[in-house]
Amino acid sequence: GALAGVTRAAVLDIAHREKIRVREASLSVERVRSAEEVFLTGSGVGVLGIASVDGHRYEMPGPVTERIRTGHIAALDGDSRW
Image (cartoon, rainbow, N blue to C red; front, top):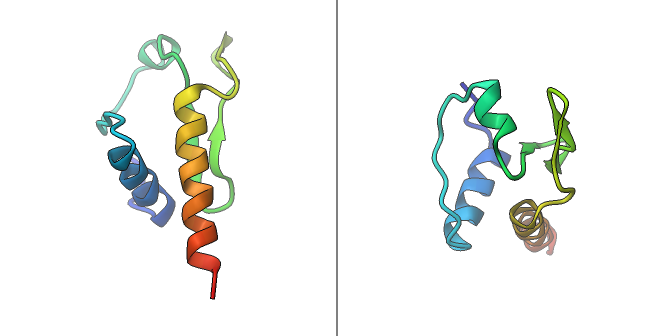
């Protein structure tokens, strides 16, 4: 499964605040391909929209990805102010 990282935890918090339903689960490639949008999170990339998986293309950036990314950037800006 995914590591319990700082960025991952922040994204789950942002999703909760934005009233975006989230559920952690292992997914098949077929399930990922049927998603409306896909993104990755990590300390190095923040929230990164994914353009395609296994040949299936996604809207870039999707509306949920953009809401999460915007919330993450705002959180980083708030944490970095002295």
